[in-house]
Amino acid sequence: MSDIEAIRDKYLEQIDAAADGDALETIRLAALGKKGEISLLLKTLGQMSPDERQEQGPKINGARQAVADALTSRKEAMETAALDAKLATEKLDLTLPAPSAPKGSIHPVSQVMDELAEIFADLGFSVATGPEIEDDWHNFTALNIPDTHPARAMHDTFYFPQTDDSGMPKLLRTHTSPVQIRTMMDVARQTGGAGEPIYLIAPGRTYRSDSDATHTPMFHQVEGLVIDKGIHMGHLKWTLETFVRAFFERDDIELRLRPSYFPFTEPSAEVDVGFSVEKGRRIIGGDSRSNEGGWMEILGSGMVHPNVIRNCGLDPDVWQGFAFGCGIDRLAMLKYGMDDLRAFFDGDLRWADHYGFDALDVPTLSGGVGA
Ligand code: DAH
Image 1 (tube, rainbow, N blue to C red):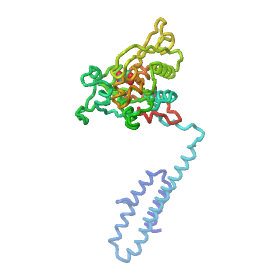
Image 2: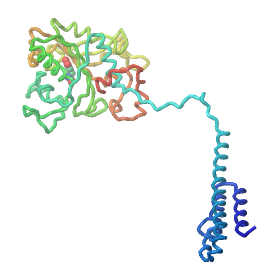
Image 3: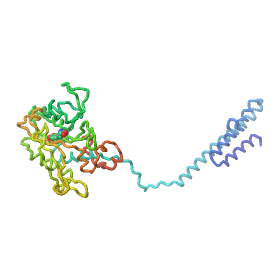
Image 4: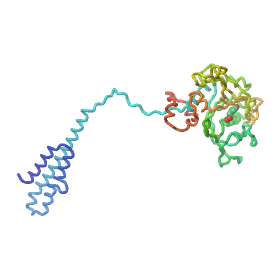
């Protein structure tokens, strides 16, 4: 056996005996690395005579090839063995429950908007929306709040530098009442001033420059509007009573209408609901005349002012109606027992997980009314 064959066999034996990939790499470097034994032999070919080279060349190259092949097949064998060993020890138990996917929840405000839409849909009301960037006419003037009216100052309005067509600054709507105006004007336009019945609620975002535990600069209101013939305050009271009892899911909720003032209604009433105390907590409903019971204001309402109906292009001698406006965030707080309004809009997922609702399996209305 020539020297070269002895060298080749030495490496083939080592490769056979190698325990792992690291050992193989050490052998590869010793044989075929830059300064490897076989690599150095290959370099000697250059100094040989042609005859010698013809004899030695194939031998050395053959040895190099044999060692390289052995390294490759040994490496593959090791990998296959490792995979087999892994497969033998790892078992996939298909009967185990799948890990649960992270799941979002419905924000209480969206949930309440859905509940409102459902309750009022049963009473024949549809859901209307309007823009959050409003102009002076829809937010104030058409609602019988002219330029000089003190009620404007009460609204802490956010104004934009841009003005509308009449030169008045645009603003973020301070209430949902402009949706009343937009709807009545649309109806007047579509019917050539003749008018037709309107039964709507308009939930959505509203804005005022105000911030503490019970006020955030952005908050939610729901507006209600009924326009029809022969509408009176009895309809208003029945509708609100039916709504409040359905919303708080109790039949023993009393309503109290207190005379009040809004420029867009006449007469106007603030509406209180009776509460009692159960287990140290205030509950809407029950005996409001009991020891710790009492009244809590929940919304403003009234008969739509004739000026407002006229401003929208309808005849107040033909059409009458009632309207109401209610804070949605407060409704959610009262129903679901949250006490800090600011947490509603902090975006803390722990709060959302705790107070949020499971999405229903059926499509909800919140996508349509924009929480
Ligand atoms: N727009 C009023 C506010 O933001 C709430 C309101 C009161 C709305 C009486 C009405 C209403 O439609 O009739 O404070």
